[in-house]
Image (cartoon, rainbow, N blue to C red):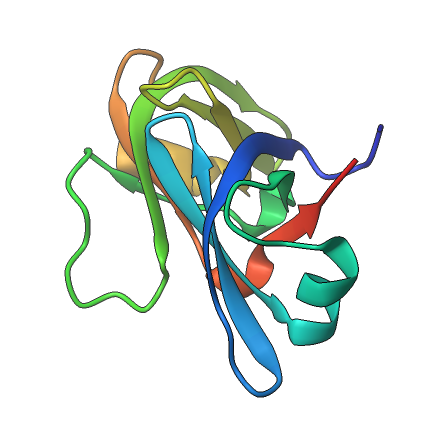
Length: 141
């Protein structure tokens, strides 16, 4: 499948927490767990349950970054993925930063050049990709 979202992280559902309208799907991607807050209708339609293979889909514009690899306490975003910067590509105003996670998966985010400079992002530096669970879509084959 080809889509415009820059991040397609293959994984396996490890848990589904059901709610009245939405549920939270926990997806094991390499050494990390990515959480997606999606509707219960979508969870049922996709047949999401522990053991099901799926893909966490995230637009690059939905990824925020922090310098370093320490999780940020007191932050509502459920996904904080620590890794190493493997690519920094600046454009006219915005750029793309790619972080490789310990298991080999890569997360690409689109941030301003000003943020890239302020955070001191360079290849080889540690960074934390931060993604709200409501910004994670789930796909199945």
